[in-house]
Image (cartoon, rainbow, N blue to C red; front, top):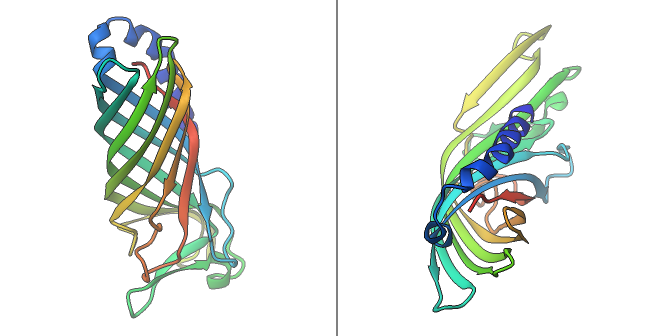
Length: 226
């Protein structure tokens, strides 16, 4: 979380100076979008608890195609989205290669931990139908689909491997059955470079029939220098 906040402060401080040398023609054609958001996970198994704050970030560049001489345009681009899912459970894959979430304390009674999460990142292709007025009001409704490029788990807490009270840090790459292809609806509204943004995933976090049927809804702030 601290790292995310530092990035946001740096970006906010640099936006004003960064946007000055960009020509007006470039402003109308190219958009840089930096999102900071919180993921709310829907339909989590009743036996699992997760944190309210699951901070993530997204960065994308889009090219605008103005519709005639109107305030409307169509945009397409590319981006990277990074998400976190903080839970009290480990991902366990059974003999049929189906993933499930099991509470840590049901697997290791008495275990105490400080952090446990699933992290995953997608290379996205966003598409947007946009409105931008002379008064710098912005609104966009779109769709994006992406390809999984990274997934891992992180655990920090007592040593559950040897059952000691020593603190350990464990990271596992390639979480089994994380959905490799995602898609969903996006929306953005705001003024100048500050906007509210949202993403409603139409795919589950895990591959269908290969894991819990939970999916994220992202809500946050978009920063757009141009």
